[in-house]
Amino acid sequence: MSSRRIWRSLWPRIGAQERASGDCRYVVLRAASGEARPRLEETTLPLVQRCKNLLAASWRAQITTINANDDGPDAPKVHGSLVNYVLVGGSPLLWIPKNDTHELNLVMDERGSMVVGHTDPPPLVRAWREIGRVPPRAMLLGSVAPLQRHELDYVKRRVAKVQGAINDAVKEAGSALQSVVQESGNLINSRARAFEAMVAATDAEYSIFSLTPKSCHFVDVLGGRHEVDVAEIAGAAVDPLCRVLLALIDGINQSETRRFALIVFCAVYLQVRVQDAYIFSADRWGFNVLAKAVPSEESEAADNSKLWREFRFGFSREVKDAEGFCVLLAEMEKESLDALKKAQEVDPDFLKKNVPEQ
Image (cartoon, rainbow, N blue to C red):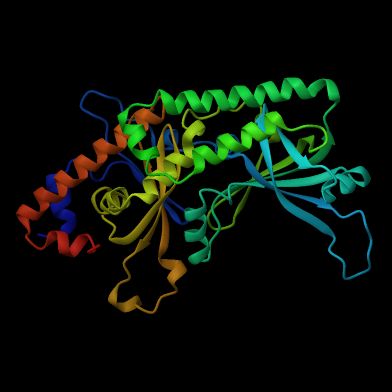
């Protein structure tokens, strides 16, 4: 019996609603008996929410301004650097060090750009670079202006409130989320330290600027740019996973057991044999995986970057928080491993043929 027929006969969830879009395959896992399964498009977030999630989940951004000093034709036309920020409504607030080149540039020309999503988690970013790709990111273009003095205290209170919500999310997390976050690097602490420094920053250390976006683009894993209506950003919902999203992603990728589970998911739910996999995006309706397909004998010499593909696993129900996400992920791990065991009983060589050795 073929591998596909074994999956179909032993695992009724296999073959759930599925489609391909560009370089990504989507699958929606079947709902439990009696539940209405959502349409596939309902488990994929709109672009504006994907941008909002990237902006809300991070605290580091690359900003670029137009150089004010004209030092000749060979001088760089722009200046770029990483700064800390916080998203308030639809406008990022930027903490720019005093006497930084950006300050002078913005006096002369208020135009600036901001890119988010390509800095964290660092191990995942390195993996993207090794395969010659860049992670999904949000790009904003707009005008950058300093905040008025009377606005500073309010902004710092907002930062403290955001940090408090993150701390509460970690402290109140159940065992499922705690076990994942503990595998993460230092992202939770790094974000906490950054926010604490933002709250404690004095006028002598930093100037706080607000970026009012005039245009926004979501850049996908292939580098394709998708325009997003900036007027919709402020009103877009912030996903409940955003408070701990980067630590959640990093914790899954840092665990060999959970990384292997991603490989098994590709085999069980999509019938795709892969030799490596990373989770790079997650939300209340599912998660995205970057996986390296096992090349066929005919394509052994294929370009390594072309073997990496994006897969979207959509949930049959919306999760309410990061704990619920981790619980559902654990359920998927158990289900897929049970499916492997059943398939192995039918074909003793099934595991060898479908899941590469680790």
